[in-house]
Amino acid sequence: MQPVTKFRLLGFRLAVIALVAYWVAIFVGTHLPKMPQSLPSVNDKVMHFTAFFGLAMLLCYCTNSSRVWRRFSIIVAMCLVYACVDELSQALVRGRHSDPMDFLADAAGTLTAVFLYAAVRWAWLSHRERSDSVHSPSAT
Image (cartoon, rainbow, N blue to C red; front, top):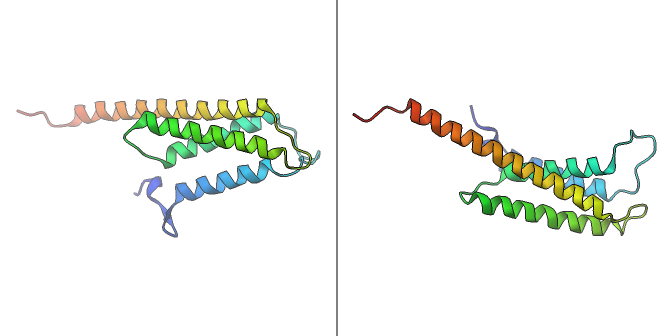
């Protein structure tokens, strides 16, 4: 069975297509005029946290590098720059405004996702190394 990161659609990894679609959805969602009152009310900060948690998690999943700290630093920087641009550009949309607290929610979602991804990755890799060393034939 092929790992999920190897699936391809039109020559592109499926995970990268999901990342691009998700990023476009975030951009469109944050640049629409104010949401109608008929929709269920969700705290704005929870929406920002969740959106950037998902974005950072997809970026972590889609990228790969042997220089782990550099990779995660770049992902955090990309998300924070995008969050800043996103907040500033919302001021140009009728019914929307920039809010520094939204930026903080974006940053919190990003950092939570990257730390969680890094912790799970580290635990999985150390478990795999331990299991490989147990199952490897001993040299005699």
